[in-house]
Image (cartoon, rainbow, N blue to C red):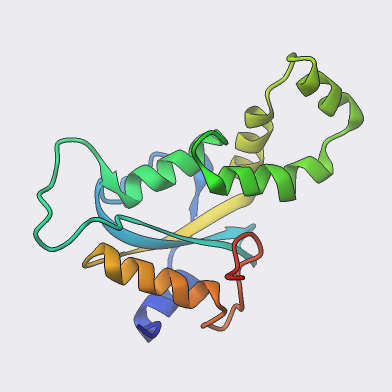
Length: 160
């Protein structure tokens, strides 16, 4: 699937949302979608999708499913089970920690996840689009990861 002009525009120039403002009422609690993450609105760093198993026949549950839960996980800053937060920790947070911060983490006086969450809240924004199903979301994410749009490949998760 090629990246449609409308999806590219929405993910490039649509409204941006701060992770610090989570939860976001604009994000549907159910549905497949694609999102881009930006460092202070100007540097494209990540593309993701959620809702891989969602189809037109998927019944909505009483609990959130899809893009909402994925963005919620990213906003938490918790590295466990969230590859985006691991990338942020390794590539963006670790290089700016002081030796005292690293020592405090190693001694258990501070938590690395707290540094990750603060970094996400202070520096990162996202844009998103909802799509009809998980297969479409996956195809759009794949097209962006290989650089199939004007912003090139994402800093944190380009296709290899």
